[in-house]
Amino acid sequence: MSAMNGASRSSGMETATASASVTKRLQNELMQLMMAGMDGISAFPDGDNLLKWAGTITGPAGTVYSGLVFKISMLFPANYPYSAPAVYFESTCYHPNVDLQGNICLDILKEQWSAVYNVQTILLSLQSLLGEPNNDSPLNTEAAELWENQEAFRVQLMKTYKPPAL
Image (tube, rainbow, N blue to C red; front, side):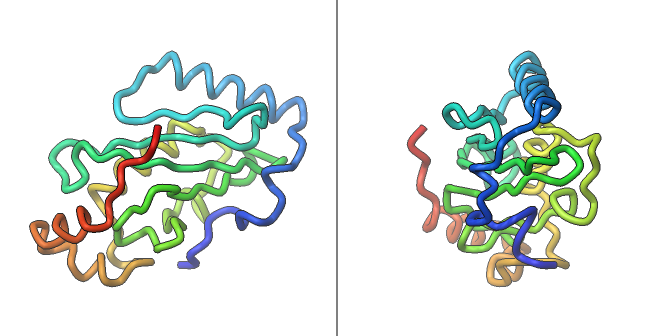
């Protein structure tokens, strides 16, 4: 799978102008996310630009990521939800499906994207991916090879982990 999801960070997506329908959709998704009050995931527009969001994901309990917090960015295209947003880890995330630049290999952010997905779906999918990587399609082969030895994996994870400034 390719390392990139959605469009590249330098494609100008963050300066795209949202249409009224995209604006309404993203405002509704923000309200749904806030009302759901789900533990371990959050995302909000980054400043006044509704097409650029910042989020956090807390590693799920019972995994090597338990309690660790990761910062992500989401860049929505002008034709959202018909095209997937570009989603990146801003925090270093040692994971089989995340490369050193924060690119994520996740099918719903690429070929399996559907307009029925939303911000909450993306955040929950990323949180799930932390504990259940797809080692058949790694972006970080070292992490994929180490995954089977969870103790050694956790040691390497903690060497690279830096809590984000929230």
